[in-house]
Length: 241
Image 1 (cartoon, helix red, strand yellow):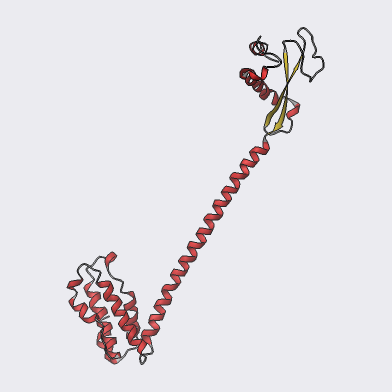
Image 2 (image 1 turned 60 degrees about the horizontal axis):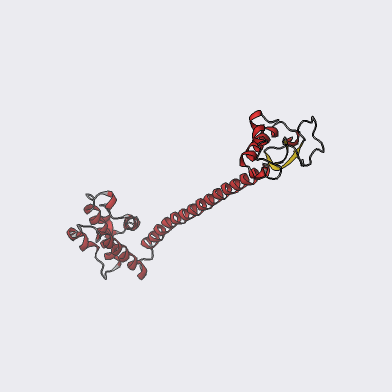
């Protein structure tokens, strides 16, 4: 039932049977009433989110207590009655909710895959470190008669020289350069040169900040492996470790 003011809007002289849909204020008014009816009507029982699907005009001749031929549009008369049909808007909300749910699952899955890949790469990188040290230790600790042994000792010293050459004060490392420079030496001399190189560089870089200090782990690992063999020609140098 319309209020007095709303009834005046619906029954305004310019609102007629053929043009009522062209009046936005009438449409808004009907939709407002429909939303109130949706909360009370049996037509919306079980609906989670009733929505207006259709508005039909039915009417009564002014002065009559009943609406003749209910649910048919009136052919005359000013007092207008409107029949509203509803549908449940739950399906739209569910589809929107499902879209958000799938997006969330996709983001979680993507994050999990990236985490697995990063962990895998870290494991590979970490696994390579001990393998390299082990390989160096094996070469430094055995096969002294093979040429690969001397070549490895020279490579270690050369690698250390390359690292030291990047330091700003490398020009002052005269003694270290003399001890670490490569050369064609016998196995015993190669081992002695390697140990002297390590000891000289270690003493020289003590005053350098840790963040810029060259990495001595490779040469130190080899030196300690060689010294663990307790060979007589290395005893005096190994005592300085």
